[in-house]
Length: 232
Image (cartoon, rainbow, N blue to C red):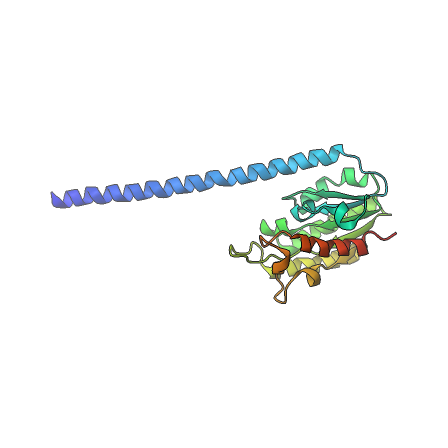
């Protein structure tokens, strides 16, 4: 009888533990789509907005993901002809899908930083660079007079919660982007010397979350925008 009771008790404990594990998995699984849901809706809403807005001829347009979207570019550059077309969470494919309303205006200059979200999604640097070259080829074909500058993808910094993309992957991507720019007739501007520490990570003074830039970081980037894009 004692063995039977012990067996029953053990089964109850194991059953409770299993139920707990399954409940935790279900909870975590339920959380992921919530993040994806809001990211997807943000992308959709921003794309819809940008399609409805009309860029003036001769604009300077900055295109990219959250790093671009968070910049107050007109104030940073001191120019009223600078327009922000960054969308948080965007990818290379996403940028290409929304090029039409940008290129219709025949912008005077276009600055691009994109690719970190592709790397974080597991895409290989060579694949991402090939996609960027496709974007550049389309821009060259549809707006041949537009000055095109591609800014290097920035590495991340470990601020206590790990690094989503290894610096080596970012460096590999940037090298491939530089080659793509050379073939496509675009200018590649490497921001890493201005924004990284001696170890190659995004410098502590330029980020709080390890990915996005502080005001000081944006000032560094804006200086590069001014010297490469805002030429008369």
